[in-house]
Length: 332
Image 1 (cartoon, rainbow, N blue to C red):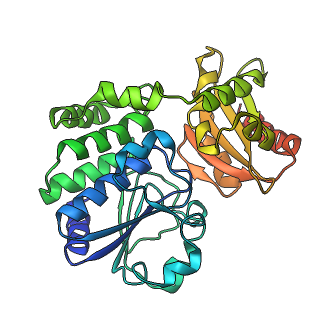
Image 2: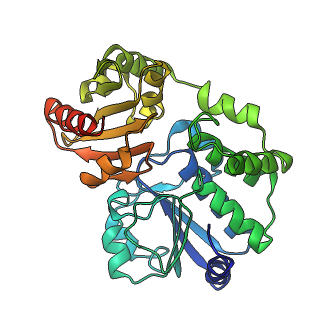
């Protein structure tokens, strides 16, 4: 749990700031996007100027969270532009849902060279200690819960919009309350947010029943490549660059694909390998048993949680597959 002392320090940092850079990990998920949207709204209400920056394109199904889509570093904004206004003028950087340089590609030099004051809000164990003040609670199911605590501590209003943002953060990071991190605290926080105006039914429709044709076709390819190992206890799937070209889907479209195979009752762990344009593979890992996938991810420079983690591996595909299979085998 985060102490009241640390919450007070965070409030003081925000109170004395005027121009705030907000960011989160690459390939932002619902928790990351919900937190960025929430603090953008809160900072605006406090008379501050929020400058949200994403490090990967915003998934289409989260675009409704923002009146103006955040700039994407490398697409809308060149790294050298961070040295100019308004980013060079920022007096506070808030990093949400990560505390690792490996999850912030393109920002490492900015953070190290500009000596900005940094506030980190995160729920992962893996850490590089990026913040001057850090609100870290690894027992929280989502970073959105820590943001909710911050708002309650500071007595900042939770509007209907903010309630929706934070409900989405918690719901998506718990697999809509299906994952093992769904505890009474997550459910109580979610109930409070519904009381504050969150519409759980509409949010579920927007996130899980709103696939594009291209995304659905990509999921079909993913399922067609399902392979089971170790007496059907470990599942692997993969996607190649050509699959995105053929379907017209984008890499953010792969979000939640790894969870489909976990419907098989024998599965204890799963891995999804997604080829990147540079030939590396993004590896998403899930566990429904004793396997600690965070330990595996950390071994290769990644991180996450015991039951959900990720990392990057060099190609070719067979090499990446065998690397993860060997690690899973050791733990099983």
